[in-house]
Length: 342
Picture 1: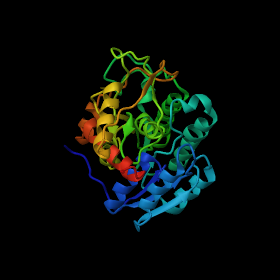
Picture 2: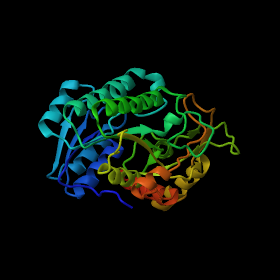
Picture 3: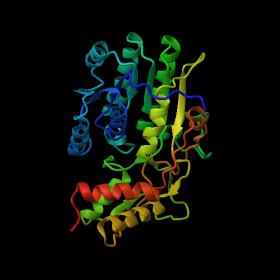
């Protein structure tokens, strides 16, 4: 397997460093002795305390510098590139969430389109070894063919969030072609784990349970045709990114897209039962969610399922953390973080 390992002498710029994936990636790079510059606007889309906790964990590292700012501010982005001269840029700053994009479309255009355009412009005028950016499994829309492969047709997004991520791939391809920027897009599949995003279902289910409220399940109570999700544990996501960083696309087209998913979709109800078991173990008493079944929401897709063959071929890696192991780590962290042990 011929792929280059991480180079600690390089400077890494990570946007969205206070975010879920941004935090774990920053920490992994810092642990390997890399210089990391983090940018984040620390917005209040979800609990800001969690973002501050993540940043607090990164601050002790001598080689970590943090800039509080928004990538939709072009001057800030340009100044950051001029001052720090990053070799490798990982753009993880984005307005996340499919359902939120229906209520608040403006922030998606600001962050995901204008923000990403500013990053591309900065890479154009301050050349980098590699630009890695977050795309999403949502670009596959309601594709019926599974598993989803990178070569599949992705011109039918069913949410504005998905449209912005597909736009990112097109923009990166164009900039790569015009200005020879080596760029890699990563289609993440339902990322979960400790210190994750509270707007994600598994985190929300735990919150509801401890607030004494029922959880809402958007599958019409149809267990035969339940929603399937390719749940991917955070460590697997970060390992995949880590391996790709020093391996930019080569050849005529210096733009590539990879799926990073678990390659084994789970029924949503199985995932929920596994979370109940994990929380029961973490608390030392039985946990059962009260469940309310509702129709599937606009913009949601029935199944996500990643083919990971391309990633394996490129860097010899395939995510393999089971939901039992991953959810137990989340449950243990959650009970500890919110001090829920009797």
